Each structure stands twice: as structure tokens, then as C-alpha cells.
Image (tube, rainbow, N blue to C red; front, side):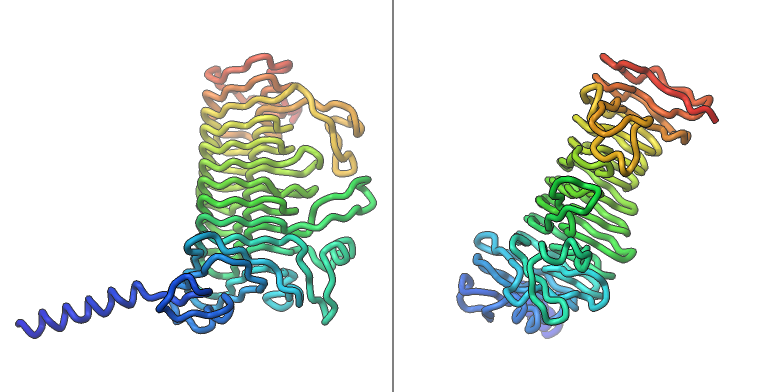
Length: 379
């Protein structure tokens, strides 16, 4: 009996020591296995291990093919694109990521900065900047973090600078595009928490599977089709999302089963195509809510008009570019919605727009300084 107890204790002790073990990048953790690059540490680390990254700037393109935790310690290390250029990974995907996890089961990233500024790209052995490739369409998915068929948990990350400027024919000004902050592909569960995403072109955070996004600050995408946070399913809560009203198709938050407690501002569409939308604050969006299943307790405010930025992609009731269009609190888009209750709508041009015929709008909503109460679809 005693021998069994001693043996169990030894196993527990050994397991505890193993749980504390970590491969280290840099020299901030003396006495541990240290590597000069994050890529070398990833290659050396066993599955489910922890890679501690010391402060510094690492010019690498990281490829992760096994379950790992990679975390910054004693400061925030920064990952930048290598001088040899980012490669297309996975091959044929169209993505040029700074960090890619491909069929790695589960990867956790903590306390890292991913800086896409001045990135170079390697296409067929030719290395050039994004400005050279973006107008040609050779790069459409320059991405900070890209997970493919891999569950991801990202916390305390700072992802920025994934965009390039070009001027296609329909736009007279330079536009940011060709870039995403964080992208998850595959029907997996993902978490992004307490992170900052900024200066990206298309998506700030995108997941075509299930996503929990909470307590993040996202100021992108800021391109003509930019979306701050987009999810197939999941919970999007307590984020601050800032878009742009310079382009016709920008969206603050799109999708999600529950969208709650977010601060969404300066987008053409504040929140769109979502499930239950509750207790959000929406300021200065052209159309605050559009095609949501339920809208409860949201605070909506905007000036009564905005300027139609790009009539090439649709006009507001035929109004040409440069002419004021009415802002909208909740746009039904001629589709029936569930509970629409206790929303406080202030100052917008149209409180409830495009309500289907016969739709009854709950009297418990509050409208203040709203020019038009509602419009009704003809069908």
C-alpha cells in the first residue's frame, strides 16, 4: 500500500514538473531550452507544450502543425514579416499569413504582437511589397493570423497593419484593402479575447465556424467591403468596433447567435445578419441594425443623414453620390423579425425602415428626435 502511495506521488510530481516545462525563445528564462527563433522552438516543442517567447522583434513567418501554446513573457514580443517575403500558406489557398496553424487541432496564442507594416511577399520567387501586388489582385488575403481546421484561443493579442492601398477605377481615392487581422476557417470553436485589431483592410476578426469574441477593440476592416467582427455562430460581446462610413459596404459586426453589450460606431451597417442583438450601443452608423432576429434594449443614435459614399454599389432611394441619405435605426429589409423591444433610438432619419406589411412595432421602443417613425414594404 505504501509503495503504491509513493509511486503515485512520484507520478504526480513528475507530471507537475512537466506541466511547468516550456521551450523558450530568447534569453529571458535562464535554465530552459532556448532557441533563437520562434520557428525553431515550434519545431522542437512536443505536442501540447508551451513555447515562451521573450521580448524582441522576430522577422518570421510562423507555421504551426501541432497543438501548442505560444505566449509572450516578460513583455510583448513582436512578429513582423521576414525580408524574404511571406509565402502563400497553405499552398494554393490564396492566403499570405504571418502566423498559420494548419490542421493543428488546437493552438493558443497569448500576449503577442503581429505587425504587418511594410510586409513583403514572395510570389514565384519575386519579392515585392503589397502596393505592387494589391492592385493586380495577386494578393487578396494578406492575414495576420490564419487558422485552418484548427481550434484557436487568442488572448491579449495586438494584430495590426495588414492592408495595402490601391485605387481601382470606381474609387477616386486610395483605399485600404488586401488584408485581414484574424481569420478562422473550418467548423471549429474559436475564442478571441482582450485583443486589439487595427489597420486591416477586409476583416478584423472572421470565423466561418463558432466564435466567442469578447472584450476586444477592433478598428477594421476599413476597406470598401470591410467587416470588424464576423462569425457563423457564437457570442460576440463587450467589444468596441469602429468602422468607416467612407465606403458603401462596411459592417461593424456581422453574424453570431448572441451579440450583446458591444459599442459599434462609424460603419455603414452597425450590426447585420445576427441572431439576438441585445443592449448594444450604436453611434453614428448609417444603418444601425439590419436583418437581425431580435433587437432588445439597444441604444441607437446618429445624425439624421449621411453622405452616400459610393453609388456604384447602390444608392439610397436613387440619391446620387454626395447627396445626404437618411440614417436608419432598425432596417427590417422587408423581413419579419422576432422581438423588437425597449430599443432607444435617437436622432436618426428613419426609426424603423422597410418593415414588412402587417409588421407591428412594439410600443415599448423609445424614439427621440426621429424624423420618420417607420416605412412599410409594399408587398
